Length: 363
Ligand SMILES: Nc1ncnc2c1ncn2[C@@H]1O[C@H](COP(=O)(O)OP(=O)(O)OP(=O)(O)O)[C@@H](O)[C@H]1O
Ligand SMILES: [Mg+2]
Image (cartoon, rainbow, N blue to C red; front, top):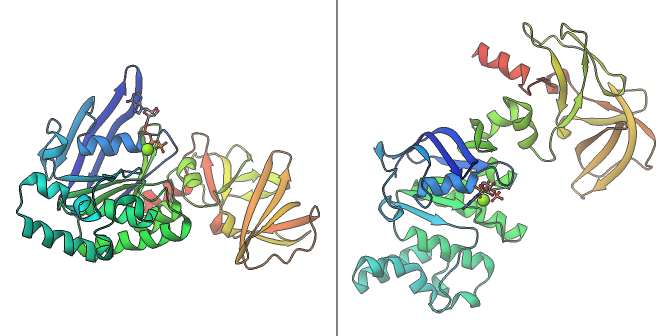
């Protein structure tokens, strides 16, 4: 186990800056997940920690020791990539144990270690098979075993489950969570999957254009996003947004569909320019009821829950997420939308979450 510290880390390719001035401390044994849109720099940052990509400036420290110029092989890290290329001509056992052979460990010691790890990952009955004779999930576990056998101080995962079907993903997600509980190795994990980020992470790092937007526990980010970007990124389906007109003091707001809000939460000189409400905070009610009116345009029934798409005005389509089957029998009729005051997010022109700013001051 080891801590990781990134201090003013930047990375450029020519004139293209892909990581900008990142400061981050990852505690010993912590599980940290990087999320962000495609191309925002998640893999690059992970590779900088691993030592596979040199930073253009700034420092990387592992357990307080500067390793900026230490090669990947000497950093005590193990990597599991999205495309976990196993050696096709080697058995599962040799794939797992290969790193130990190159370290010069004796055969009986290697066999013991392979056996222990294979049992933990439930691939001990597959040790004589070749990778092509395995399912995707089994291959994934072998790739994790190959990383584990080296007993790294830090585990780095780059979208390790993205090739798997949803059942296997869930199974592997639970296994990775269990693995972390068992071995308590520091883990840094990149994913596009909301459920993985929310359930695996001690803390989530939200990246955008090579910068950190926010670092926090999953629920912190969900309930107290610092800005509109994080509010829209954490949660699925994403938060509904709408531009609003303010009376200039920020106290009375004209929202979509004729909504008028009195914003008691707005502090000081803040003037909100947009509101957000999460799909799961909305309910569809009869026309004339609720706080917003719109046209129910489309309903998607997933069996256990459904999504209702309500058009508030030509530019604004909001999605409602409700448990259970849809009770609406027709589309394209007028409905109301209901939600509580506490579920309204307000954002300033630069995207800052006004309520979050006040919460911060109050802490
Ligand atoms: N070797 C390279 N040369 C030039 N540009 C690069 C290089 N590697 C990455 N980039 C650029 O750096 C940016 C960040 O890439 P990175 O792979 O870190 O993104 P990512 O967040 O992992 O994206 P994804 O979610 O699609 O995997 C991208 O704009 C990419 O095109
Ligand atoms: Mg990537």
